[in-house]
Amino acid sequence: MHFFWEAFVTLFVIIDPPGIVPVYLGLTRGRSPRTRRRLAWQAAVVAFGVIVAFALFGRSILAYTQVGLPALEGAGGLLLLLVSLQLLTGHTEEPTSTQRAKANVAFVPLGTPLLAGPGAIVATMLYVQRVNSTFDGLSLALAIIGVAVCAWLSMRFAEVIHRVLTDNGVELLTRIAGLLLSAIAIQLVAQSALAFAAQAG
Image 1 (cartoon, one colour):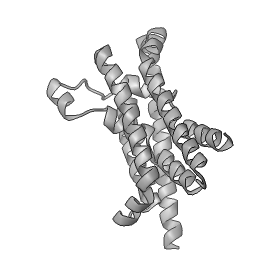
Image 2: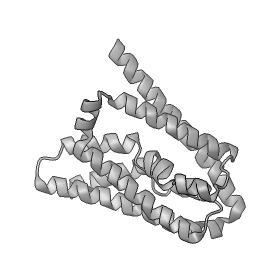
Image 3: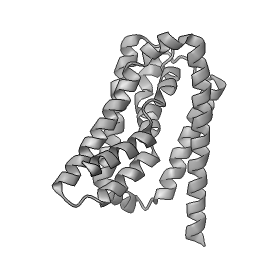
């Protein structure tokens, strides 16, 4: 149980399901409640799938593509920076029906890199290295499932939060979320640059 709670709390803090609410509301603005609910569970499933895939094959994937963890952090940081700029400037135009068919925010940026970002992926890969028994593996799997369910619940009931906060409150939280996301993005890029500099040195 100790391993489960350690993994669950770590992933919960990194993924931050409550923190995704204002971002989710900003990215799904103007869409029907049914579409929002669909995007919520799709984003949770995508995040779960990405984390599980890297838990099982992460080291092999990075080794095969000759991509290091610093590069993964840098790429995730740049993607988050683009999303944060959209939230800060409010340039999140409602997509047309054709654009909706081509783009799905549940996959990018909600599922990844907002939920299943570099931090969650790296943390999961590190916990995999500590799995020494079947019980440890089951505990890690349950921790990942638990965090994914928490992320889905946060987005699923985001509309209730929207009714409480009203449009002005959501707009304020969206701007704050954009600011925090930009800071996280810069931090990821900086960590990536420092890691590359350490390797070069």
